[in-house]
Image (cartoon, rainbow over all chains, first blue to last red; front, side, top):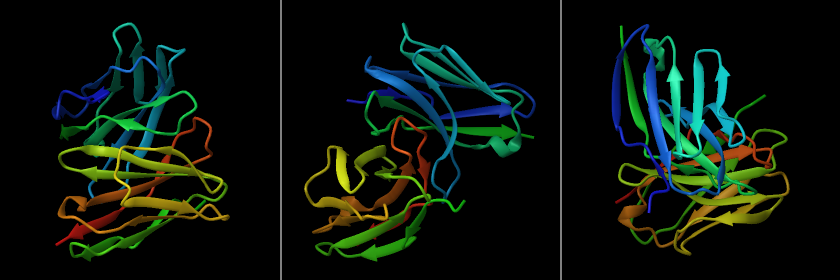
Length: 112
Length: 112
């Protein structure tokens, strides 16, 4: 039973345009959400997070939106750059636990 | 500050053998988590240690075990290796209270 789902295995975007990566979750007990970026042969790198008490968090070119009623979050990258090409994982935490539950990832390709 | 380090980076074993993987967290981090990444299942949580105690455990058989030392370094052991244990094993460290987890580069285990 997959509690965190990233339904798009891949996404291709032109440089300078917006990249929108989506994530859905089923467990209403999740209260903290994170996005990680992963390059081949490296461990995931933390990008941005959001607490369930917020609906938006912004850090430079990266913005995460959380819609609790829809159990949906999205990561916006504006403007997209070729160096953003990587696999992006959505992850969730349940209060009091350090057990990250990951989606299966979306491979983003930003074309020059 | 040095990042999370994992040794060895690559390992080849045969079925039935056992293996021990090592992880050194970021200095000051007391929580160490282990994850298994496979193409089919994605990133899956194995277990988490905090101050030498296992705090959380994922849904893996008892062949997978771990421990944490007083200096927060952690080891993961897999006994009676199976072909399906071939995966990238990732270690992550954090301060331990709903903080971002920082990942190491992983150990690529191949079971023949």
